[in-house]
Image 1 (cartoon, one colour):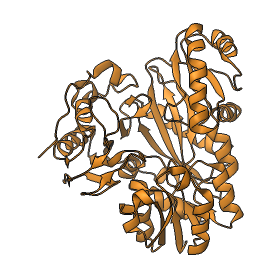
Image 2 (cartoon, helix red, strand yellow):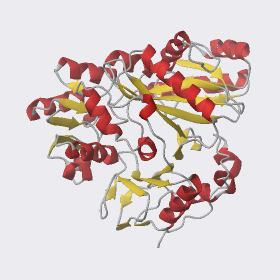
Image 3 (cartoon, helix red, strand yellow):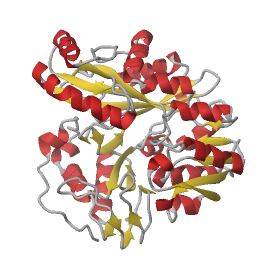
Length: 455
C-alpha cells in the first residue's frame, strides 16, 4: 500500500478521501487555493500546500503546480476525487510521466469515455445497448437537422464532452435545433474546450439508473448494484438512492452484466460508473461512463458495506479485488441529498458566511461536509455545504430518517436548498417511487418563500 497520497481536490470529497487514507495509515498531502486556507481538507491533511489564487485555473486546475507539490512532498500516488482534474486525460498522462500512480483508469480510457461520441461507438462495438443516435460530430445546425429527421423527434441535442447538462437541450423539431445549435455549441466550447455536438433519440419519461463497477489489474470486474438518480433539476441530480424502486431483479442483473461487459471491453481499471436510461418497459440504454468516483458513491457504500475509496487505493496499489460478484451484498436502503448554499426561490448560488451550523444526528444518518461552522461559502467554487446520507432497513424508514434530518438541520447566515429538498421527499409521488426524470417539472410548484430550517 502507498505511504503518501496527494489529494488533488477540495471540499467534502478531499476530506472523504483523506479519512480513508488515515484509516489505512497513509500520509495525506493536501493542496489549496488562497480562498480555502481555512478549509476542512486543509486542516485534515498531514501536510498542505498553497497552489494559487481562488481562480480554479490558477490553483485546482493547475497541473504543473500540483505535480510540483507531488515531487516536493515525495507523493507516490494522486487521488483526483471527482470534478476538477478527475477526468482529465492529460493530467493522468502527466502523472504517469512523473512516475506517479494516478488513482483511476488509464489516460487512454479516460479520453475515450470522456467523449460521448467515442464512448457510444465503443459500447455499440461491445454489444451494450445505446440510445439510437449518431456516432460522429456534427459540423453545423443543418447537419443536425438532417440527422434528427432520420432518428425521429423529439431528440436530445448534446455536447460530446463534459457533463452536468451543459450544452444539452431537448428539441422537438428542426426549427428548435437551428435556434439551439450555436448557443449550445458555444457553451460546450467555453466550458470544456470542445464544441463537438451530436443528437440522440429522446427517451420518454425515463429513469436515470447507474451501475457502480470495480475492476482490478488482474481481469476481475464486479458491479455493486445500482443507484437511481432520476430526480433532477436542469439535468443535475437532486436525490440519489440505492437500490432503485423501479427495476426488477432480472433487469438489475441484466444491467449489471452489461456494465461489467462495458468495463471489460475497454480494459477499465479502478472504480467507475456506467449510466443508463431506462424506459417504462425496463429497456435500458447506455448513456455515458464516468471514469471516477461519483458524488453519490456513499449510498452504494451504505448498502454494500464497502469503502469505495479503500477499494480504489488497493486497486491502484496493484492488489486484486478481495471478493467475487457473488459476495457483493445488498442490505437496506440508502438515500443521499446535496445541501447547497442556494436561494430556494431562484436556485442561484447564495454565498456568504455561515454564522451557525448544527448537524442532525440519529440512527442511519451520515454527513459528508464541505465546510464547517463559522466559515464562508465562497463565490469561487461549487456552493455545496454538505451531503446528507441516510440508511434504513427499508425505503420507508430511510425516507422517515431523511425527513427528520432535514427538519433538524440548522444553518444560519445563508440561504439553502433545504426547502426544495423537503418538498421533494415529502411528496406522495416520491414516497410511492414515481421518481422519473420528469419529477421536478411534473410535481413541484415554484417555492414562493425561503424558510429558515430550525430544530
